Length: 343
Image 1 (cartoon, rainbow, N blue to C red):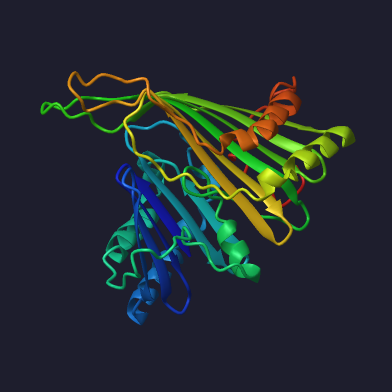
Image 2 (image 1 turned 180 degrees about the vertical axis):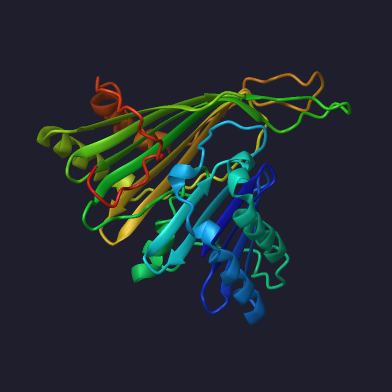
């Protein structure tokens, strides 16, 4: 299995093999510090984990049953991918509230992850992180990438042979509230409003676009659009995707954990032959300072590499986002996770 949990303070992920070998990473948000662990889980602990993963209540959960949210009082995001005989079960719980209907089967796994964070086999401080993805080999890579991951630290990269895709992009724009404690310290952000646009475009020319919006203490609203691009547009897109600066780009923005007024996060996935290019960018505006007066300064942080993907983003806006297509009725949000079958 692969499991990841992100809170306001830390992002933790773990990859566990059937023989008990594990890889665990802990990232302190806002500090840029990562710790990496490898080791072997005792046989009795592996047996306990398998029992938790194989309870019927967990096996029967589907993503369509989980209430998707962009805004919540707390940040408690859990991603879970479990290897089943008939394929990978992939679950995305965006908030602690979204896990409540499934607490009997999911909470034991969350507690198991907390215990695993105490594993005593750290690797050297400069060990590179992998976000707990398996090695780049055969089915192992596909298995983790089928986890339906999206958000600030991971992206879904499943490539179905029957339905290959050209790109998947998720753009989040958020406004945040900050609160001041009695001691005068500004607390972490509470997202007040989040707007998300995601697009997945298949080699067939078909695409799916979702526009979601949620404000604090209000339900998420999502519009789903499906259509296709023509041959000329497809050729234009291929030229943009094959631009040398974009092909060679390797960019993963670490979560900054800053107290801000407004921000934007972009996750872009482009399959390229036997590999998958995964890029992420973050920008922020109106950083809250801790100086005298506790004022919002005018500092703006924008990824230096963001202009490289600007032509692609402009093409998507012109040819897909601004196109007047009908809204699909009663279509649930999938965050544009790749579909195994043509849409």
